[in-house]
Image (cartoon, rainbow, N blue to C red):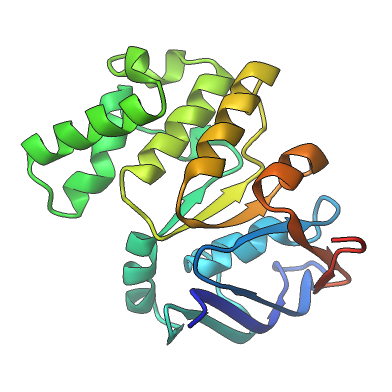
Length: 219
């Protein structure tokens, strides 16, 4: 059973030309898939649609074997799918790194002790323990990007949606991120303009062109 299926997706922002005109994709368990295409093609739109932040004008979103339409349908999806936004400041809103990482688990009903254990585990796995008590808005862009990934992994998602995850990363942190992602068991849907990063993380790619997804030439 596919984890995520998008079929005949059509979408336009108010007052603008259609962005998606029949886009379709399937993401299987353990699969790594990249989405490519020019800025404004609709790649981020597709990721947001998977977790119900946007609704298609036409077509269906199926996640974990069920068609998802209403807001209530997507609550389960958001527990099982982690979206790393293109801009970390859209995702980090608590005073400290530890509080940001604990936010999701606490909302899932974890106890304070369980949340603290998750904080230490995730930061340890990502070699970010030194950032535990830092004020989030004092972090560098690269540090924010890695902490954003930590907040998502704290939820133990089955699928990761990554929207330009190498933005604001220097060469060293980009290499660290690639190493971390390559070792994860989750299925990954990756949006990235970086061909070397895509080749390492998600070598199979679909290109979004004229509102549809087509197999990337040579992929």
